[in-house]
Length: 90
Image (cartoon, rainbow, N blue to C red; front, side, top):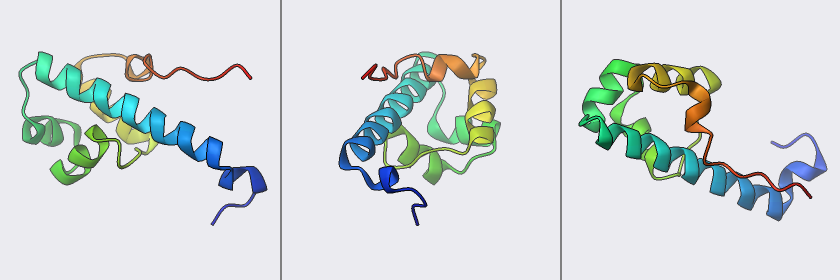
């Protein structure tokens, strides 16, 4: 349950949906470039394949720790998974 009124702001919710989609797409892109299956990346990173599927499709976010686990398994800095996310300056 949100603790602050701005956590239920529709515009904010849309931005988070976009960010989840961008991060998931980046993970998928890197996974495919490296020739990894979802199962292989899931095993290497310690997340379940179902979680990885939902993340890649932007339907689920990640815990901070899992983001680092996936980045490590892909051999990239965690920040590179966020590079595609463009935040509004407004």
